[in-house]
Length: 280
Image 1: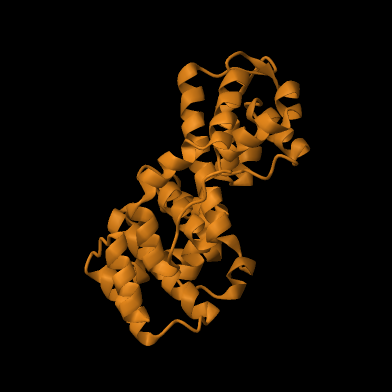
Image 2: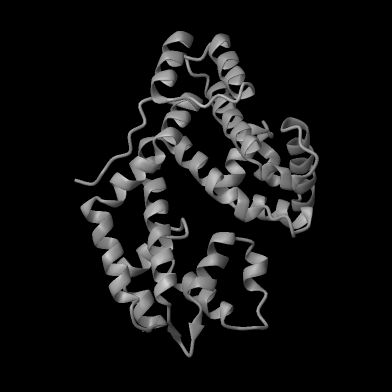
């Protein structure tokens, strides 16, 4: 039986518990037989060059490879994945830029074709193995509590999506193009349900205005600061609880969560349990 992540609480307090135990839980998860077997299989298969046809036809290898980029479950999109890989090999193609999906861009760059084959260095294989373990753990967390998975994705990906050397427009477009990160921001910023139907330029304008106002930052790149990342995740959980109308939510519990964040709350598991009881 594979390791199941332990998340005894919901909401922001549950997030702080997960965050405080994250390293140990990832270690336990990576030591489980199914994860170790998948990593060993990936390392063995990629130890020598492999043709694109063999790569795409090996559903297990493809699943592990896609999972490393948080694309697990999309291995059935064989034709699309082929197109992504072929377009990456075409220097004149703008397909990946227009796709505006950082996960697929990173996947295509990692598995770039050379004379019709994928050839990875030992260091790259090891790095992708680590990425697979982390992304697979996030997926397992989602099986327990999807909001925790979204929080982990946000924490892991925000620094990759928002880059100091990029323009604010480019950063905003990358944020809008990453569905998990976008979901956290839309909820945390209390954006309307019809936000997605707006023109992309207008979405970017509204997203920037809300981020600067709600997070009290002066530029989009400030969203990568640890304290702002934590504030965004705190607001995501709080606003989600409000929107879902959970019966356990009280004005006291909302206030407590906000105060915890404002005070730079770095809770241990026992503190979280105590605060959960206190606010119930």
